Image (cartoon, rainbow, N blue to C red; front, side, top):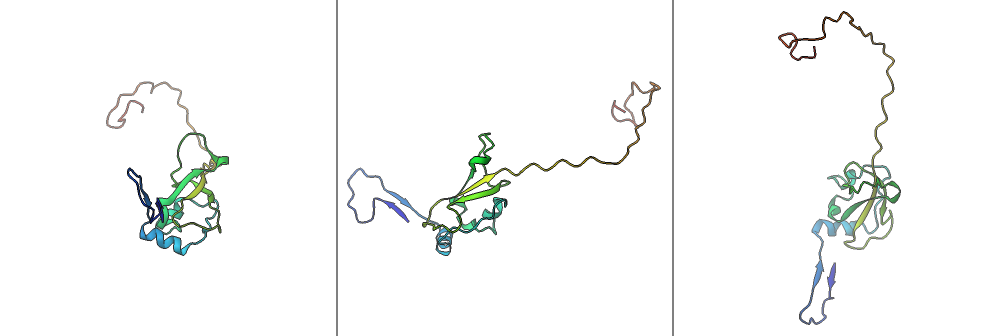
Length: 146
């Protein structure tokens, strides 16, 4: 995959050698995907790296980042669990290099809409005889707030 210095070059001491490698599943994934697969917009990011996801075999090469227009500004790093996909780098259909990192840019899932107000009428009894200002907890009243 990647090696510095290239093979066959004589080494002088001291030297730093860097070798990159892929796991078998990752290598097979890149062979099967010469171009970036399409990841649907607004789909849950975790659906694509989970057991059935298209990025499952290369999940260690996937990085989740906030899309610049959707960064919540909290300093929190997206984990790709509950966030929704905005786009990917490289984009769908672009060529992939063997072992390259894949960036999935995400946004927070919007908060659920509040429930509409209920139309149910509720009768409230207001006791004004002042006989329950102080209650002693007991068998029928386990707290002092009965």
